[in-house]
Each structure stands twice: as structure tokens, then as C-alpha cells.
Image (cartoon, rainbow, N blue to C red):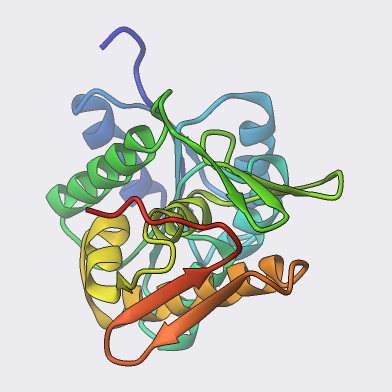
Length: 236
């Protein structure tokens, strides 16, 4: 590896934070540890990171607030939340903000590593130079830049929004099976990932409503279908 992957780790439990940092560094990741949300934000705007791992409950600035502010700086950087909270509402809030994954404490170091590797594989796999540009009705969707353009307005998408819209466009006028999307984008078909995908579908519908000819339809018991003028499916 020519250049190490850089991780910003924000964890207010210093003992756990140091253990995680040492473990990730031993696995080849250049990891910076911050013990509160304000320090995490200052580090992010000064340095370039490939992935963020944030504890939710932190002093000065909680993980959700930190993630929202970082999304204003970089809409694409993947974020994984760590928390002792197990409430569905808290987990769904993390996904609404744009989390790529969510782990509840306690967790194993090995599982954290596997989840980080899975996120990085997804992100790198979607940055191929051959990624196409879709003409979605009046929108131009650049999958490499992860943005939609319409009437001289540019709308930046998060990584998961872009991945999901690209899958829909590749299946234009055909059904994108729900389980296939969950396995491809989230690596696992479970309740929380399914609810997260519903949130992203709602966000995409809100963005795309600027063109009334573009529609994402629910296909009961199967998945979703995007319909727009002159669309053709690339699905096999």
C-alpha cells in the first residue's frame, strides 16, 4: 500500500480510544484519536481522512452533531458510529445523518475491523474511472462526482445516496430487488439496514421531485423501480 488509509477516531473513553487506535494502527491504518467532538471537527478540517469512527455520546459536541457538521465539509467521507445506545430511534437517526454503519457497545475489535474494511471496499469500488453519467429526466447524474445537476443547480449526494441511485438507474424501468440492494450496498439484509435504505429512498424522492417525470416506485414485496423519460436498463 503506497499510502496508508487515514482514520479519524473520536472516542471520549480514553482507555477504549487508545486500545482502538493501537489496534487499527497495528492493522495498517493511520489513526488519529480525539476525545471530544470539537477536537474531532478541528482535526477533520485540517487533515484529509478516508474514514471517520465516531462515538455518539461525547462532551462538547456529540457524534451526531459532529457528523452533520462534517457532512457540510465533505459529503462523501464514510462515517461509522459507535454507541452504547440500542434504541431504534437513535440508530435510525444515525442513518438519517448519513452513517455508513453503526456498532453498539460492547463489540469485538475483529468485527470493527471487518466493518471498516467492508466500508472501504464499497467506497473504493464505486470510484472506478469507468463510472457512467446518467441522464435522469432533466437531471444529469455524475456517479463519479456523486452529484446531480439540474437547471444549473448542483446537488451533492452522500456515498450511499449515490450508490443507491446508481443501482436504480442501472435497473431503470426494471425492479431493483430490495435484498440485492441491501447485500450490495450495506453488505447485510437486516431490520436496521432495511429501515436505513427506506430513509435514503425518501431523500432521493425529495431531491428528484424537481422533475415530475422522474419517479421512484415501490414494488410491493420486491423492491423499487425508477422511471424517467428515455431510460433503459443496464441490468443483466
